[in-house]
Image (cartoon, rainbow, N blue to C red; front, side, top):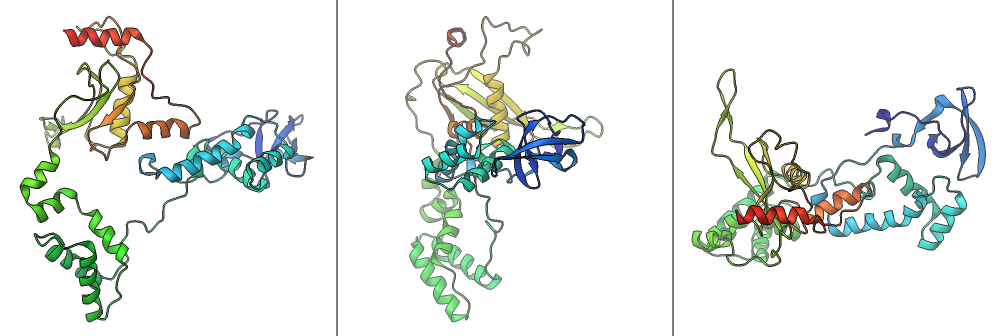
Length: 361
């Protein structure tokens, strides 16, 4: 939510923005025209007109990022900043002396402390401290002639039974670029292009279809750590074998996707989500919400009347494909809003008994 969507609070102790700086209301308005503010930097009281005040959330918020794509080191850096300012956030009437004391204890400048507080108060999430992604990330900046040479060499030598190494592919591209008087791309650019090729396509071209299919086979055997209900749950996506049509012209809309959250121990379906959107973070997140919440209202009037409830938090969530976000992203989502997601197994024994009864049936 942006600052324009939030009302301006004039209550005592509220932090507002006045002339681009944070101020704290120390005396509520008596005439509905002016208000007395405290400047934490100068430690002075000022009387300011209400029309010049704005909510602190009016500070431009950083763009929303997908928490599943954030690197671990970047996330840890953001967490470190939050831990530095966390004691100050719990003090609504903090003074400049408090900020300087905290800055000296953490070996940072007090101006940085003020900047981090403004960033966090703008959106209230730890993701405010994450650096924005480069605007040109993922774009190909090479010329069309160089791109053609790269694609031709990859198709002719890398995706073949010759199985050229990345270094040999780069040397061939370098030779052809010099022959055509073109700028040679960096070796890391070529290595990144090779990493972007789908693993199945690379294995099939270099080692054959049999080797590529073998990489997709699932390991059979006992799943470790799934001895009791809600210890481990798995998420899977599959298209439904139905083609839905609209109710007016009977034109085909498509096949919806079904996302299931299954308890490994009992094989019970804890939650599901159906959508026309392809599998992703949204479908998995809504499926987890459906699994965690109680389901008594949804079963009202149906033939199924459970003796307990199947809404609980599992100890570990395991996606079937590495592209989906798992427990780490759930923890990030919770911590980004300054809350805690423990990931612990549910303490409701009734839920475990319900799952065991369903398994026995």
